[in-house]
Length: 106
Picture 1 (tube, rainbow, N blue to C red):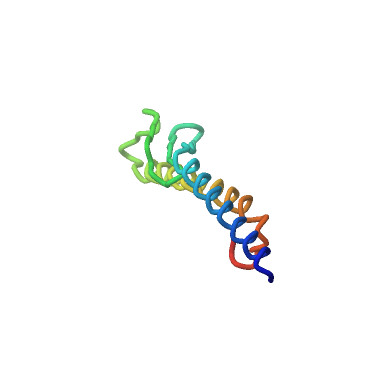
Picture 2: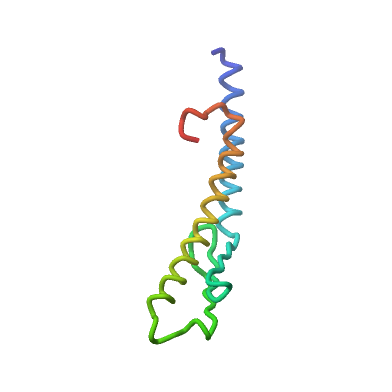
């Protein structure tokens, strides 16, 4: 590899790194929503995985069946967080696809 090729490769890597950082920041700021139980439990989470809001419909609150409510909340939280992770993964693949680094785990 000659010096010019190396310089071009480094410039491309720096551009990709800047693009990845920008994408990560944008995704972390986005809100991902999951709704389960026919809309009875809704969770909003950031792309960083922070849960910012949980809404529970009154009719799903049953003191005799707390486990069902716990399951609904847990499912909604996990789905909202996974949605953010999936978008982040897809964005990182787009950014790194042009680098020819596919074999390096990108």
